[in-house]
Image (cartoon, rainbow, N blue to C red):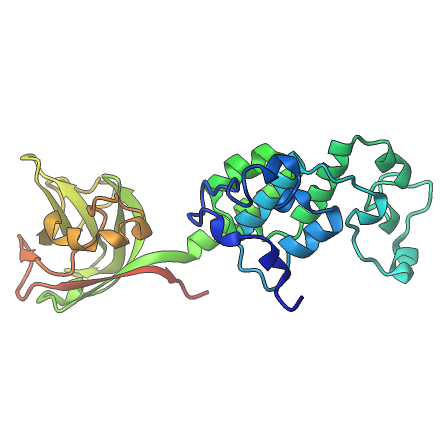
Length: 309
């Protein structure tokens, strides 16, 4: 009894990979359909206690999959007393209750379906109502956009408004969370500094830093470039306004073959680049080109930094 409620379920059997997580291994295979164990054996009140146990370490996606599997496989009869309801203060309800002549306003008593309407629902619809109510407790901002757009949306357990708010929050967080490259030690001091991820070229992130070159305000860029002979190199350059990177109009200072970046393949997906390592800005291996001055720089990739608010 002293163990967390979540210990009733073998959470460790989940595929912890996030996107595409599977719930089929939650309990023995035959228990999913026979109702002898696992998530489908719980009644509505126990479902909330177990899935949303405060000591549980299950991800938000795992919790959602529990609700979805319960709707699909539970044979437990749902009684009215078990249906989750919002806790409201009776005094507050009296303050905000709308008069009968205002059908467009919603009072506290309108937050949950009436007893009569619920009792007329099918057994399946009652389970859906339970799952929808419990799904409101999920932190959707912790679920990947790919899962939101597929598994979550297809389930119809969450409203379009809830999904919109989740996408909006993730978009705002994405704007604030960007990788950075710190360049130091270059003989040309204008090149040194912090470059912030912004834009994509040839399927890999670009990094930008505002600065001054020959008394003109310019944007210094770090980007991947493919030469006419097929070789690929990272470049630290100034790209003229209105021009695409990787052209002869670039003012190039330093370059580095992509082979020097492949040792950091583990960071490629974090920076939004290709998983074969081409998306990683090399730390060493830079050489002088055109306008560069010795010594050559050293670059440090700082993935997923939170920008100052």
